[in-house]
Image 1 (spheres, rainbow, N blue to C red):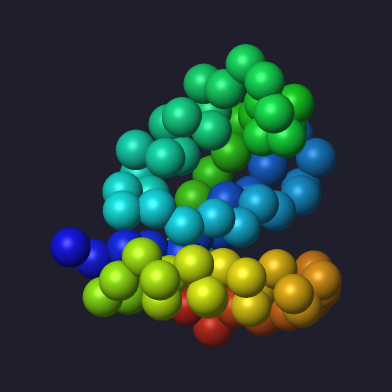
Image 2: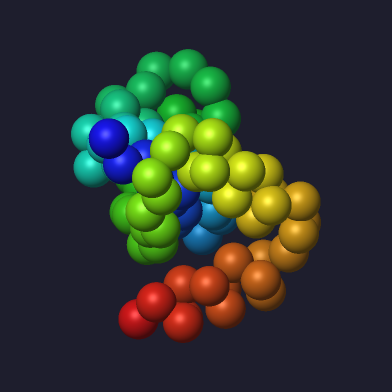
Length: 83
């Protein structure tokens, strides 16, 4: 079963959230319906980037790598390259 690393963009404050999931579209719905946690205060969210991996482990490693960059510029370049 494939797993995905994804980036969602907050329409409210233009922030980004990086995550991984077996079903990013369903996960986006959960982010937009959340009543607590980080993503609940920044709704609505839009899915702007996705990468597919063969395993959860690979998707999680990629998520951590993107987060480790701590760079909005890096995220914007990823999104732009996929467009």
